[in-house]
Image 1 (cartoon, rainbow, N blue to C red):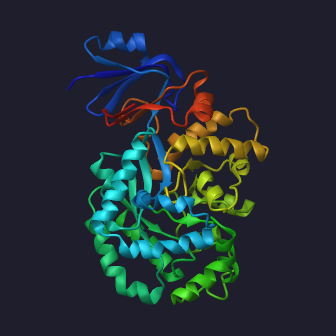
Image 2 (cartoon, rainbow, N blue to C red):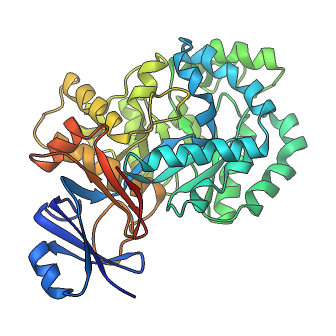
Image 3 (cartoon, rainbow, N blue to C red):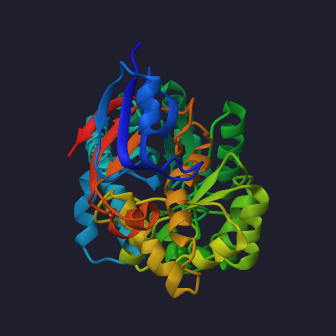
Amino acid sequence: MTVTLHSAPHVLPICTPPVPDGAVAVEAGRIVAVGPRTELRSAYPEAAEQRWPGVLTPGLINAHTHLNYTHCAGFHDNGKPFATWIQDFPPVIAATTPEGWRASAAEGVRRMLTTGTTAAADVVTGAGALGAQRDAGLAGISYLEAVLQDTRTWAGVRDGWYASLDAAAGVVGISPHTPYTLDTPVLAELGAAARDRGLRLHPHAAETVHEVAFTVTGSGAFADWMRATGLDFSLLGCGSGRTPVAELDAAGLLGPDSHVAHGVHVSAADRALLRDRGTVVALCPRSNERLESGEAPVAAYRAEGNVVAVGTDSLASSPSLDLLADVAALWALAVRQGSPAEGLDRWLVEAATVGGARALGRDDVGVLRPGARADLAVFAVTGEPYAALVHEGEGSCVGTVVAGQIVHLG
């Protein structure tokens, strides 16, 4: 094996301070050293060197997306708010072939790589898309989604659903969609099934006020939708009196082996429950804004010590898969909500890297250190590196490296 040096004016390991004129030494898909360029050139005199401009970071981690909905990008511009927007998906799900799911997810992976993202928590509706990240050599998890099932309908599809999950090669997990699209016994079963298989969980949580109304009182727009579909949920018409976060906890879906998407309509008690359970929250501000879902309490998450990650959601609700665009949106939200600007840039870059790694349950991605995967991203920005990534990073990716191989050169 041979060593390759990737060097740049600024190397940002995340786990240690920035390295001016730094380098990362890579061998056999893993990082073997990080430090000043002069030191690494001396230590590896025969190494080939890839010299990059700007800031070199770990590959970014998209902690919530649906890559198989890349072919639904037209939904982004249809103007519908969440409660009606989501009801357009069942016909798409019914009409999309396994090949169609696979192609859509592969295109999503391609777009993601051009923005410096090298791993994702990808929620997969069509099982044909479960291999998209594996085929691209990514370190992410593809979560097979269960959605729109009550206890009766689930009995008719569960064997096939589990067969698809168990047949999937690569790193997979389970995504029980939400308490308003899955009956309570189904949610609990899926949580138990994940633990039995040693798989991670990734549900949606508290994305809209309609979700809160459904779990607390069994009423509102989602109750009307479930009645129209003919699904009979135990919460329908009565609710449980619990918030969406508390409802997920009651079903056994929170814990250090789970992370939730969105976390918009959450109380202080909800945030404390997430911390107590060790559950990371993936924040998706551009999707929330487009769907009129509300604003996540970013400042409160930061002040109270919740571990957060960053997601783009799908192209059906986000204009791009560029994670740094969501990082910039989170900065604006945090400041507007009163979060101190000092240290905010670093906190958000960490959320997009090591926070995403926490969401995936991994310690070998999201950082640059010996032994970690050689997943790298390079951004043509200048100035203080954390601030430059937050405020100038969108659209600036000039290089992406996956397990030591350059997969994007821009």
